[in-house]
Image 1 (spheres, rainbow, N blue to C red):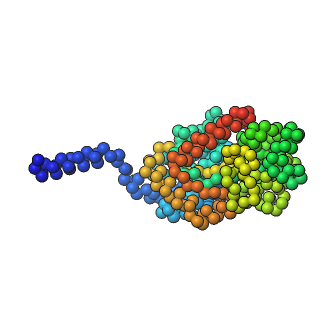
Image 2: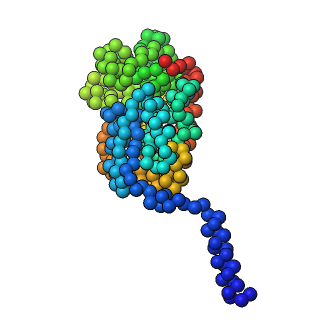
Image 3: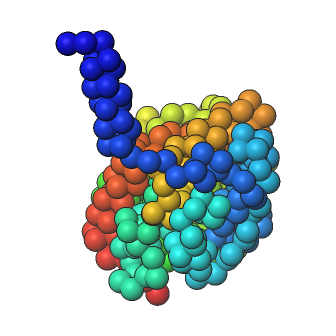
Length: 328
């Protein structure tokens, strides 16, 4: 075959390959060209807000654009979730979701204005914060084993606090009750602050408190820590054993925060966002700042995050079904 025929066939082959390849829109190649907004579904000072503000500086640096934190509190996070779900899928409106919004609320409320599977595309799990099983110092218990023995000796006599019906501290306690086969009485509060205040006052005896909010009270000796709900001990409190070490296999019940985008956001944009948020959360300054408060930075892939959301959702659905917890 003459050389010019070879060249002609080769050029046609290249053209076919290029036509068959999915076209990347021009704006994907220039993304981001304006500031990016991150919707936070709770007020300033909440755990998710603390984590978001710790990472946005380095995230903005990686993106090469300003990142604006937009606090949209209300209805236990549903207001912010709905706003983010309905935002244009162009990579300029993102959502810092919480464990409760993605894996608990959907099992408790039949009619939500958002669907986790349909309306969101996972970008990355940003950070996790374990809970700490704490008791009032007057309790004659020094370990989880002691607490289980006391609860079995006095069924229904021990009161445990939660930050509200169906919240993760409530479900962590229900998970514990189911695994330990014990009975404790639930006392619901409107948030971590009033629950911790009543625990300090001895009005309730037990609480699965967020590490961010109870660790200082433990250090001051005003509360006694029995275990952390992470799978490994925490560097900020190495002396506190895990629930797993205390005999509860696979017991993990902290909260976590992850970056989501509207579902139809282009894959190329998701990939760019993932790379930049992972770089941000792994920055030594960010890791150090969050570790000092008991949070562990993660930065996994969209696929890993999606699988984690599914597994956590299945876990809490079982706990909810077994406990009979219903929405208020």
